[in-house]
Length: 46
Picture (spheres, rainbow, N blue to C red):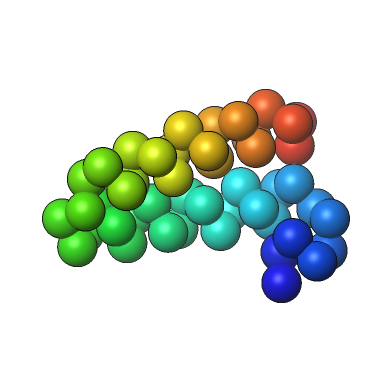
């Protein structure tokens, strides 16, 4: 749904939440990837 809104800040929020869940689940490589993607999205949302 976030991508349907075309709002980078919501894409950023989705990625950061998914990264947090991945870290809690022990999926560190997935969390790192999501963090990198969130950082890229966060730069475009500013």
